[in-house]
Length: 351
Image 1 (cartoon, rainbow, N blue to C red):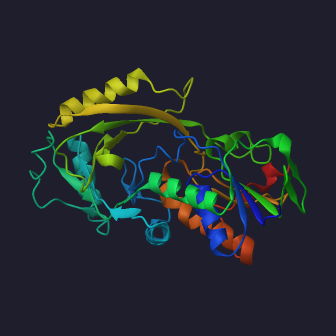
Image 2: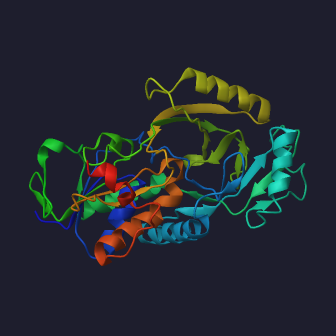
Image 3: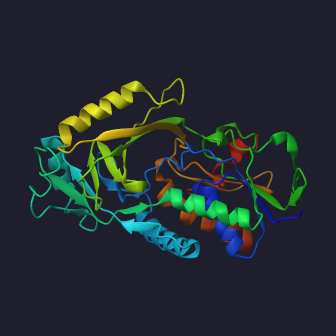
């Protein structure tokens, strides 16, 4: 069978890239074995314009956020599902110093940081001593519905191989890609954390990072907002809440740890006034990198091989825009944002 493009991975990156290419009339073949604990499928789905303890703007957020909201809305219409809604963050200040920092930043970030009208408005649900601020707007994406429904669409159009990609079955030349009985002009690797072992891209500055989160019932807690105090409580599917997440740069395995669960439950017992029952606990590896910028584009030596990866915790925000940029680059020759273009690593990738 002949297709235009092979795409390895159907997380956020692979889903948006295959969607963009199919919309342009191209035939794609997606190779992906369903992994319920992949980074995309256990992500919280939050698009947050403000990041870090210093409360600075997320890189390119003025462009990325409206583009992402529009893309999720259009994608949802095609899939017959509502994929994105505004869900602002209520940020409870853990210390007087953090409250002061918020108050100092708020006048500089009037577009996103808001002071509360009434600091007592959440006391029915939470214990807090130093008030709170609000990040507005933030958005919440139903990633699981999107990935599941798009997978069904790929199956319906006979564009999916639900298996693990096997390098032994792949032959790559500058002119053509062969994978088993599939021929294509190019292959794109959207494989998340597995990209660190990809022979064409393993020299990129990946930074292995483990994250953990809990899934819990919290009866009575409004699902109108995301709640933050060191950890996040995020509305999840089936009326549940996603609670996390950790950032571990040194770890022995990708198993859920008792230490994370115990620490998180202790925090919740002090902060949350409502009963909370943990139903699930999962861990996964994020496709993070040292530069905290995506890897998007074609290999500088083997242009039949492309990549869309390295988005870390910002995949929900970054994937729609850079999947579109990569698709347009391949189809029309338009430029990719230089700070995301994988050609910035031409020297190391040419070795």
